[in-house]
Image (cartoon, rainbow, N blue to C red; front, side):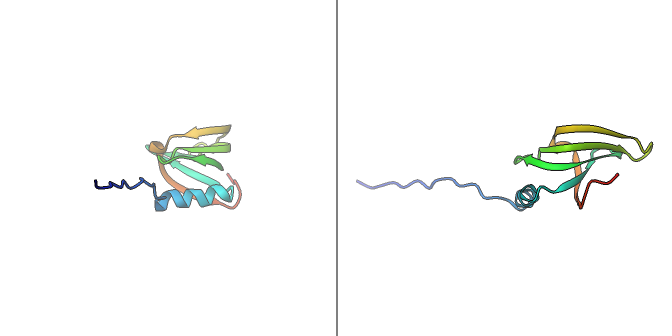
Length: 94
């Protein structure tokens, strides 16, 4: 009788997820650029994320660069498929 061993599947943290995990631990303020909307930016503090880079932002603020208008959004879930660029901010500035 031969023993069969199955390897237990383990997930590795990929580089982008590791970067987001570091940002999450430090409660970093971020600015997000959105797909197909060059004038709109969202800024807020990272509260959570998943493997699809869906982000939960707290104290989120929407900023329209064209009209210079701002709108407070509060806590939001931003789908990863809408994100073009993520950059850190020392503090949320508009």
